[in-house]
Every structure is written in C-alpha cells, then in structure tokens.
Image 1 (cartoon, rainbow, N blue to C red):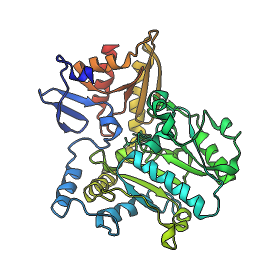
Image 2 (image 1 turned 60 degrees about the horizontal axis):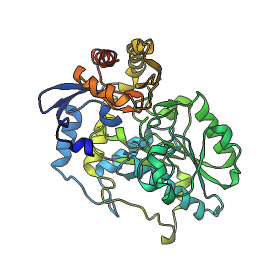
Image 3 (image 1 turned 135 degrees about the vertical axis):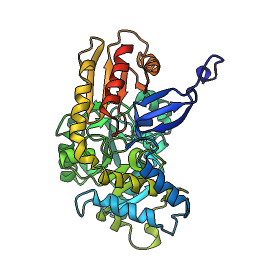
Length: 394
Ligand SMILES: *Cc1c(COP(=O)(O)O)cnc(C)c1O
C-alpha cells in the first residue's frame, strides 16, 4: 500500500475497452494480456453482451433467488447443463464468484455425507500449490504458502498432497472429496499436470466413492482449447465450479454444477435444507450476460475455431521458447506461463510486466512467470504484438 500511495506513483486508470484492447485515461491502448485477471472471453465492449445487458436492464436488474426464480437464471442453468454429457451434471447452484462456487461445493459435499449416513467421510484432499479462492473455506484448500500460511491457524483441516501417488497412501474410506484445478494450476504459476492424471484421479475417486470437485474457474469457457478442461480427458466430476469467464468477463456470477445423486440427498424434510446463499445469487443481469456469452460461442463458432487459434498461439510463442532468458514456456490452450531465468532473490516478473506497458501490453506475472492469456477473440496481429512486447523487455 505504501508503494501505491507514494507521491510519485502514477496509477494506471483504465477507462474503456474494445475487443482485446483496453484504453487508459491518457488515451494509451494496451492489449489485455491476461484477460483482466483471466475473466474476459470474447473481448471487451462486445455488442452482443452489451445488447443483452441493456435489454435485461430495461426489465429488472436483480431479484432475490431465495424462494423465487427468474427467466435468465433458469435458462442459463438449462444451457449450462447441456454443455455436459446427458445425465452427468444436472443441477446448478448460483453464487457470485469463484471462491463462493468452491465454498458451496464443500458445504454440499459435507452435508451430503451426513445426510447419507457416511459421517466418517470428513476429509477433503487438495493438491500442493493449489489455489481455490480467498474466502476462509476456499483458502483452506489452498497450497500456496505466500497466500495461505498466515491464516493457517484459522483454516479447517485439509489433507494436501503433491500428486496421485501420495493420495493413494490415504485411507480412502475417510475421504469425502478431492479437489483439483484440472490440467493446469493457475495461481501456482501455470503448472501443468501430466497428461492422463485427471482421468486416473477420476478412476481413483470412483473406486473409493470419493467425490471429485473440479475447479474450472480459470479453465472454463474455451481457455484450454475445449469448452471445459475436463473434456480433454473425458472426465465428468461430481461438482464443477465455474466463475471468471461465465459472464464473458462482464459481471461477477458463479455456478456450482452437481449430479442428480447429490441433489436427491437434499430432498425431504426441512432438516435436509442446505443453508447457503448470497444476496445476489441468480442475479438477472449476470445471467443475461452469461447467456449472451454462450450465444456468442454458438453464433461465432468459437469452439470450432479454437484448435487453429491455439496452434497460432503456440507458433506466436516460439521466439519466447527460444529466448536465452526464458527458462520454460508452459502452455495449455490459450494460457501461457513464460518462466524467466532468475538467479537473484528478487522477483523479476513485476518489473518486466511494468515495462511491457510501454510496448502496449498489460499483464501480471506470478513471481518469475509472465502470464499471457488474452481474450479468445485476440487477433493474430495482437498476439504477435503481445509477444513482441515481452521480447523487447527481455
Ligand atoms: C480466480 C480463481 C478462483 C477464485 O475466484 P474468485 O472469483 O477470484 O473468487 C478459484 N479457483 C481458481 C482456479 C481461480 O483461478
């Protein structure tokens, strides 16, 4: 905060956007190199989403979801369920952001075990270096010391494992659920899981009747080259958490999808009630934006174009892969982490990203890993420009 408040600090004030570009209050334009912290999908100021929001705004902005429903929320739930194989994820619970999408998955899983006579299944397992959000419950699952250690005394107990082999050493009869960021851990610095790992994890959970919770808050909505990361390994989870890209990056809205089996455990008397809700659950504007984002996927054939787009992104990153100052480029679809060699104690990423602004690129590093994950609509020229900006600074 002292750096932010310092007399000579000149904060970047973003005032408008268009596609993959953002403009500041001095008229400078930048490529939104991290999709406004991994949220934006189809670009800023998209006419389709703008129109949907204006139309919704002329009806009503928000109404309570507590004992009521509304057309965009109902339609969106139906559309989300249809994005998965029939009879897999059939139910949708709305919240506001990634952290709360995780919270409700945890509470549903915990209550499910109580309701179904499995009180011994109390343990949640998460992976080292995981990031599942900043609320207390979600951060209990986290495995990034810098973010999570300070609050360790107040967090609920979670078993952390480095990999599948370590998971296999636990008593499976006590495990309620295993949670993972599929294919790639984001906040950890864009760390890739080995191919096939997710499928093996699903098989392990099936064999031991443990839930699999997938955190697709970052990977959802086309980022990995398919609509959802779990499709790469033909896995469906028991709980799937969506947020960031759900509204195309317009508004805070999240959804936790689950199965008929979980849903049905909550049917019955009031003692089965899941006491969980937020004021803005099922927000009409958010749901209208999300519906418009799904329309764009269909109308602009976004998914069909993704493999070629990913191939062009891979190609655009080539000069960075070969750069002597680059240790490694880790890529998953349209997500890239470019790790810089660093023999010093200080982190180099922040300085590099600050200087990239002068070359028209806006992004944020994770320590020494530079993140490039622009909106899916970014043009080839803009991709090349983003890479050139990093090369110049390096
Ligand atoms: C960002 C993120 C979250 C938390 O989402 P918020 O909307 O910031 O609360 C959770 N999991 C993953 C994988 C994320 O990238």
